[in-house]
Length: 165
Image 1 (cartoon, rainbow, N blue to C red):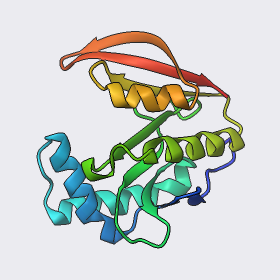
Image 2 (cartoon, rainbow, N blue to C red):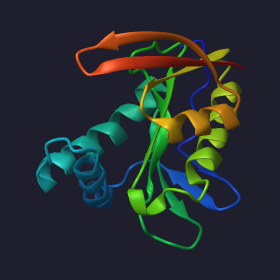
Image 3 (cartoon, rainbow, N blue to C red):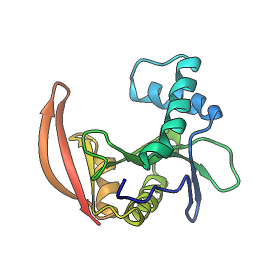
Image 4 (tube, helix red, strand yellow):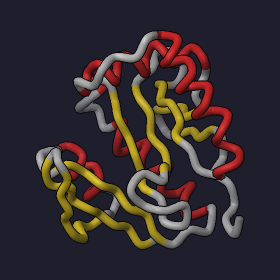
């Protein structure tokens, strides 16, 4: 791989970002429920968390959970994924539990992930956001992304945002 791997943990002013742990399965289930998708069983959630953790070293990019310093409460996740993009130009992804919204945590975590992506040697990041998701657009604008183009699928418009590192 021509890129350096992302670190497995990051620290910001208020947040600790780290690889998924088995105990994060409960928080992951809560996120899935809040987004309205079919709720996985706890065993299914554990399997997904285990797979995310196990595949991180081989890909060199991954998502990390978010927690406040000194607190064990799962707030959500942020990181790099292939998603609709590529390993060379991955997507930044973030999702927080509703109770964590409005505190700037997504912006703080996403900014740290952008810095980590830059340190891997990548030169561009993408983010795909549903056209209705105004809060995500605000996060992306704060960290320097610009809207690039729009595509559609069976669920509606997807806005592609880009950041040249």
